[in-house]
Image (cartoon, rainbow, N blue to C red; front, side):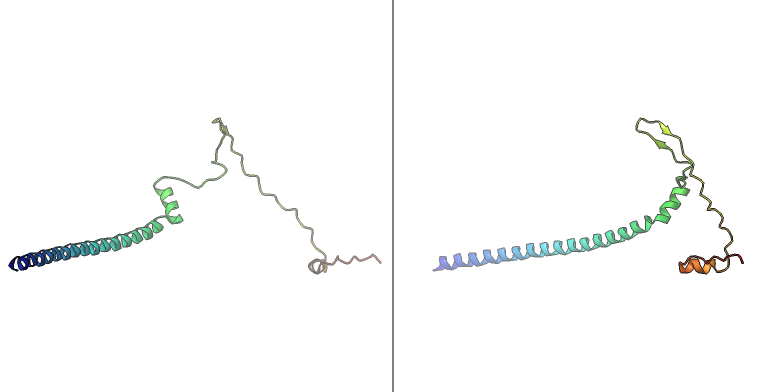
Length: 128
């Protein structure tokens, strides 16, 4: 009977040690999980901050200002545009055509403007 008691005592001690070890590992894993979740939140906040900063840096006005100031760039016009063929030859620049001038409208007779607005043809007077 003493042997059975000793064997049962050893089994209880072994299971208690195993239980303590399992709880210790569980606590370590929980602590590591919490640490990783905190790191995830920190990285997400940093990513959001960087996204906002990227959007602020990429505004068209800022890009244009930096291109003009730092890169000494200028906006394109037909006068400075050069077209290149596939073989490497340059096509001469073509100046923009001059805007067409509308022909002068003769002075309108009284009542003609009202007739034109209404869509009716102006009335003609006959000589007496």
